[in-house]
Length: 61
Image (cartoon, rainbow, N blue to C red; front, side):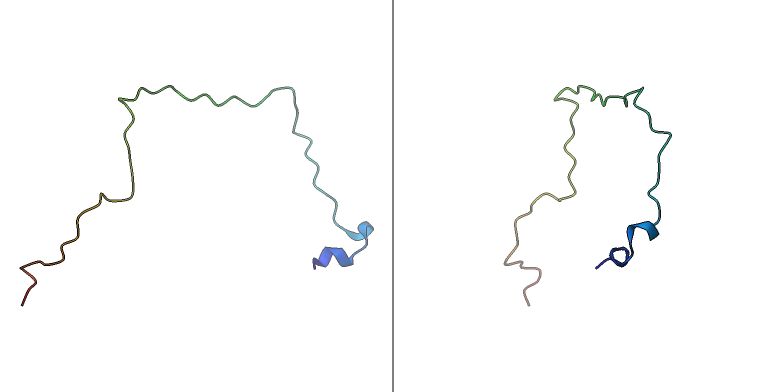
């Protein structure tokens, strides 16, 4: 339970008022630059898979 739920609304702090927000200018639109398939590099944090060595002669006693 919130501690504010125990207080009457007249004792709650006032909500912030944002006077600097206007709708006369829309936000700039996001434009993604077109990229050719040749310029795309696949980056991955997962290393390439390697086959497991089950019987390594160097580790055999």
